[in-house]
Image 1 (spheres, rainbow, N blue to C red):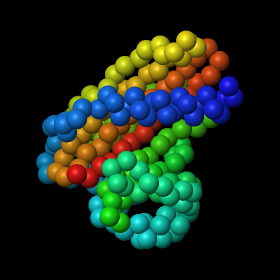
Image 2 (image 1 turned 30 degrees about the vertical axis):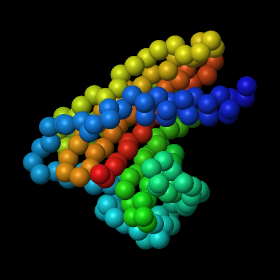
Image 3 (image 1 turned 135 degrees about the horizontal axis):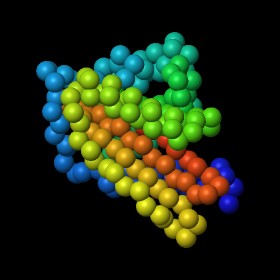
Amino acid sequence: MTLRRYRLNLCLAGVWLCVLTLPSQPAQAQISGNAEIKPPFNLAWGETSDRLERLVVNAGGRVTNRKPARGGREAIEVVGLPQEGLKKTIFYFKLGVLTGAELQYQSEDWQESKYNSMMVDLRRRITEHYGEGQQIARKSEMVGVNGVTQTVTGYKWVAGTGNVQLVYFAATDPKNAFRTVSVHYNAY
């Protein structure tokens, strides 16, 4: 199996593992003040996909894909937004308005320690805005017969009509490693 296919399979397995381990009811977190969870990049819930695309281009990014997504939504994938390690951003629209955003951080140059420090920093920054979040996932286990270890750690904050989730996923074996940190913003 090629390294590219291996990483794709691990990524897909990780996404499904994250989805399956999330609680079905919104987690209640202690929120400081009247904080409202808003989408990233100074956007607002309800932005139209046309306006978002113009903003992305003006910020130096480019749309690489549009596709249907779970829940009757449309996913617009964007690359090139200027932020350290931001590999891809996926914006989710329902009925033409913004309802979610996923920021995926990853770099071939990063070692495990970089992912760990990024996770700690992002968690600290989110906690400063929204109070202490709830841990929604913490699991490390061997999967399959190829000696792959999957690790998932996740936190969730809820405020007003939205939530934000921070997830670390790693799939490693003695020769290969796939790691990513993602931040998921969602409007209810």
